[in-house]
Structures are given as structure tokens and as C-alpha cells.
Amino acid sequence: QVPLPDGPSQCLRLNPVDEQRAETRRAGVDLVTRARSGDLAAQTELVHAYTHRIRGFLRRRIHDHVIAEDIVQLVLSRMCRKIGTLRQPEIFEAWVFSLARNAARDHFRHHRTQPVSLSDESTIGELVDRTPVFTENEIISALERLMIKRKPLDRRLMGMLVNGVSYQEAA
Image 1 (tube, helix red, strand yellow):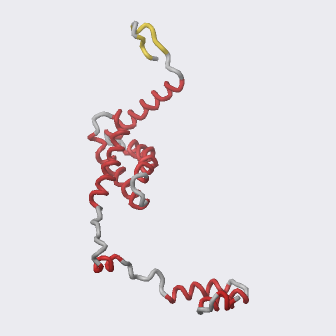
Image 2 (image 1 turned 90 degrees about the vertical axis):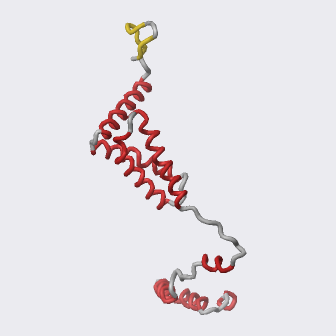
Image 3 (image 1 turned 45 degrees about the vertical axis):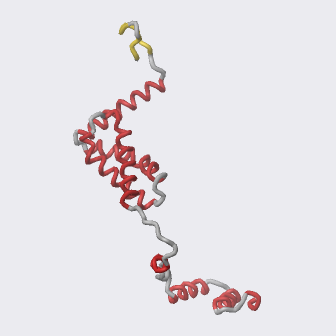
């Protein structure tokens, strides 16, 4: 119920949706207040309630999902450590998303890349990753395992192609 301007004797009743929102808001403030006082169960509940939303917020800004997940964990850890410093439980959501935004900003500041001049061939050579993804033996072993599962004609055709026979010759 909301008091009307004419005095406390008259009250306007909120619609059920607004009442539910107000109750949810009160419950959220109560949860944050408990978490601020060191209640680990309340902090855990906040972590569960906000992990998905913080993850989505950060993944829109940081496209490497592994790095984004690391930053999610960092934000949740900071939230639990610093929640005692939050003066107004009513602004918790804005506060926790500002932690996330600042953590993303810090990540970009600390991981800036320096531009490379394309005219410097020695630098370009250093950028090329020369480590083979698979060794030749690993590739041959994988092909042999695949060929065992094939029909004899397919095995013969694959063998010809691996040994450098053209598609026309193999056909």
C-alpha cells in the first residue's frame, strides 16, 4: 500500500506486479545487508544470483571466453571481499556491474598490444608461429586408424591420395 497525498488514512493499493517487484527489491536489499555483515550464505546466494548476468555482461565486451570467465571469477571475488564497504544496499546491482566494467577496463589497459610496422621484416618473422600443430608421425598414425575402419577400395584410394597421386589418376 502507498499513502496518498491527502494523508495516511487513505492508501492506494499497488497492482500485484508492482507489489511483487517491491517485495523482490526488499528481499534483495535484505540479502545484500546480510552479505555486508559477513553472512557467507548470503554472499553465496549473491554469487549464484549474479554469475550468469556478469558473465553475459563481460562476454559482450571480451570476446575470448576463457579470459571473460577469469574476469567473472575476479569480479565475484572482489564483490565478496568489498561488499562490506558498500554503503547503500539499494545500489548493489549498479555497484557490482561497475566492478565488472572496471575489471574489463583494467584487463584492456594491462593487455594492450603495440602496433607492428609491416615494413620491419625481422619483426614479421618473429610473429609467425613455426611450431607444427601435429608431427608427421601423429598425422600418419591418425590416418592409419581411420583407414582401418574403411572398405578396402576406400583404403587404397586414400593411400594413393596421401602418396601424391592426383585425383584424376586415382579416378
